[in-house]
Image (cartoon, rainbow, N blue to C red; front, side, top):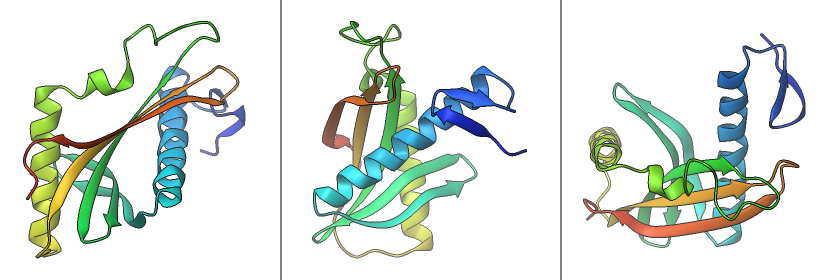
Length: 145
């Protein structure tokens, strides 16, 4: 099914809130990839899937291989934080373990001899789709080399 939209929060032709969340997530990942490239990272791949989930972005920063978890939340124009809390707060201990397992699965399939880490990129966006805040948490998840 093709999804058309006037902005990444309004979806026509989808199944409502789930599609709107997917579109918001995709938009957040696009913004995160652009941000990382502006910071000098080289994107290796995006949306790398394993049986236990998906790594949003895998990038290189110098000698480092960086696995990036992207979290995006919409905020109101006057809101200080999203109703559900800051996006980085949604990376629970369980999610951290899942990220480590997925990174290790990638390293098993694509051997890497250098150091690696897991970062979290948290984005908040206004209702008009403008990015309000980007918080890049380097080495946010213990388990890297």
